[in-house]
Length: 341
Image 1 (cartoon, rainbow, N blue to C red):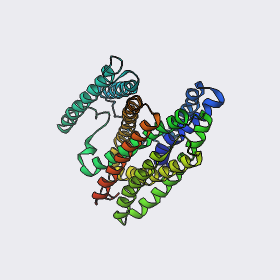
Image 2 (image 1 turned 30 degrees about the vertical axis):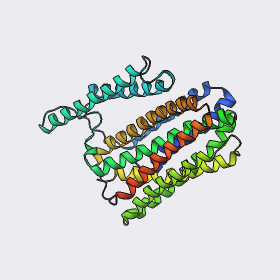
Image 3 (image 1 turned 60 degrees about the vertical axis):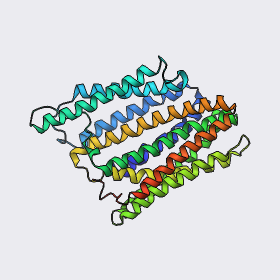
Image 4 (image 1 turned 45 degrees about the vertical axis):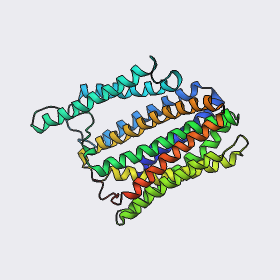
């Protein structure tokens, strides 16, 4: 995954809510869904162009792992849907529990099947490879890298839920203002991701640079998230924007080194699995993180009778998560793009 792909992968979620707020205020909520149509068409055209640009690269004998793909897609889809319904209907309700529990059961079934398929392939049978191989996670270094990326993802996505709640429900701003406040964070995060890429190039010769970037970025993320606890119903918008931009810098310095460290050392044949695995883990952890935080926010708002108090408690939980990640990264002195494989 090149640096530009990593920037798009993580800056897009930061920019999305900002642009979404502007679209809703200008064209209504349906525009949020319609905007996906031209983007999807452009992506399809880009894929076709890329295939023509690399003739003969595909393996004509490759076969699709249909059953594994169905298990994985259905499991991830059900688990994500169930998590999205948990805050509104209750995690153990009939509208949520069967979906997320069934989804996790299907994912577990895929894991068992993936191990069986790999054993069969090791016996030199003509079985197609699994839809997504998890063999990359046998490396403790790579597994820790992915775990740290999931922590950063949870803190990113969760605040993208909390910030609009604070701006709209506590400070009573509209969607346009909310979008404008969130927009600079995404821009800063994209620029910081470029800086993170530059640090990676230096870290190839000095592994300590990678560890310092990740642990320092997560520590800065914890500090920026802790700053959200100081917000009040009358806090000026520029203060909120500044805090969010600080988080954008932290995430940029954290995510890009983690992406490259996770992919480093992978063979060309493993790269599709590595990209897919990273993307799945990041999205799924973000989805469950938002759902769990939304549940915590709703329950604490009712218990305390204060939306602001619930917001602050959620910010503290995210601060602790980022701080634990920073400590884990700092203790992992071997993190580098050379050793990740």
